[in-house]
Amino acid sequence: MRITRSAIIIFMRKKTPKTKKIKKDMLISDLAVMVQKSFIELHKDMDKRFSQVDKRFIDLEDRMERRFSEVDRRFDIIENKFIANHTKELDHLRDRMLRIEARLAKIT
Image 1: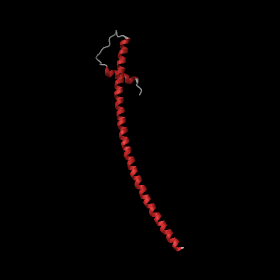
Image 2: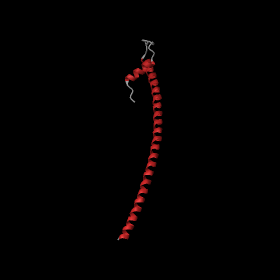
Image 3: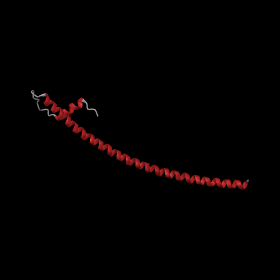
Image 4: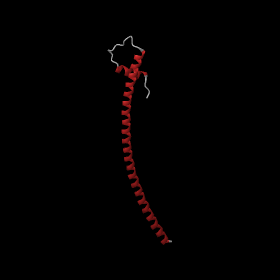
């Protein structure tokens, strides 16, 4: 995920109270510490959110796996019924063909 400049500014605005006035004699090192703290907070917040997203993806994957297993089981049932019906029909046709052949043999 790419962090945009505007996202950082918005994040920093949320975390910085507006009533606080910046001292004029603030050093660059002080500003660096402030920026570092903001990045640390941002990092923690993003880690928390990403872990929530990861958990949701894992839950979704588990549910999909269960549903696909159910669909697979149903297809197996349908396939077995289909094969059983066609096997029965083929046996019936084979018996009819044998009877017809037997009758033809008697005629000739």
